[in-house]
Length: 279
Image (cartoon, rainbow, N blue to C red; front, top):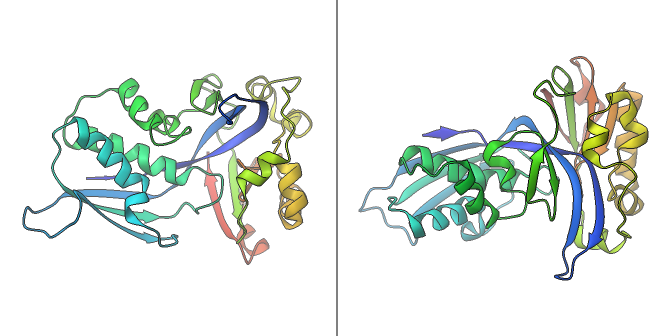
């Protein structure tokens, strides 16, 4: 059985306060984008030699790491601890770039939970799957439904972001990811938490033409200071006609929202990963 874990962009991101546990409360809108990975699972033969019950192979746009740290494996282990599921082979083909602020790894873990639920008829329902996903990471529950969501808390408290028509239906999003690694921990240290005048959901419900002035990402200032080439990419997206452009999450991907489909834009960013997706 096969599924296609999508990515997300952040429409605004405000760090509103530091929590007693050392984490931070945020406000953001998670918006799903149809740039996807590919995840397939098959039952493992009983005779297949494997150290664990989930054998994962990863290919595509991926830096090799320890398989046991992959959220696909962690998601399997969570479900297998509570449900009778067989050993499986998993093949994950990565298209969503890592270290981008697009939630690719979180999506892979959440979609693994959904895939196991469907394939083995576990009948969990979205609420239960979201509870399992929350154990993998703060933004993982979003990917169970993958609907535009206003996220608060540490990103795990979700509410509808907009009505079903949505401001972005029919727009094109261009995602640009240079070969840059951003330290989220260092970026947080440079932020002074404060609530914005308007929360992200309120701004997203406004006409998109107002977003450039009213919708901000608190991580941009410290990250752009450390990596000025990221600001150059954002400025170029605007010069190419974006109605709105922003860094997603803590980076290092940036996106531009355009009113029409684009041709040849990948040539404008020759040394970067570039994806063009219709919303």
